[in-house]
Image (tube, rainbow, N blue to C red; front, side):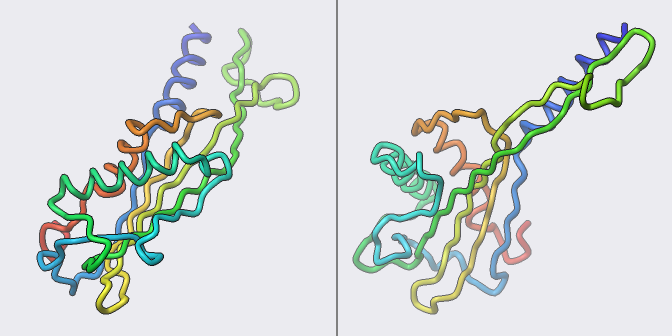
Length: 179
């Protein structure tokens, strides 16, 4: 029975670890209905800050494609000549670790981390999207999504698109109150 409690604990930690934490803020005075086009912040050249292994031409192309597709599904048009919005994208990945303690028959939870725990390593990844009004230069939107990743995350367009979709889920806001 105590082993069952152990697996319930591990499963609940895993399920909680899979949750994506999303934080979004925006300028409540901005009229988002007037924006129709977008491009990248740095002279319409796609750049992002992120870990070295993401500086692969395929991954960069997949990121760019995922952002463009997500914005187009929201009714925006990519325009390198005269964009209304400028987008900037950042990725951070941090190494993390945690101890999961094993159960023994005579104790519910063993608290001696030297002998009785297993150390698990994982990555915490964060996607950050900033959107500015090109005309005023003011930041009007920021959203970030953080979650735990596998140690060797798959950087396919499908997975990247899922992350971009989460970051842009509430963009543009439906009204000025954000509801």
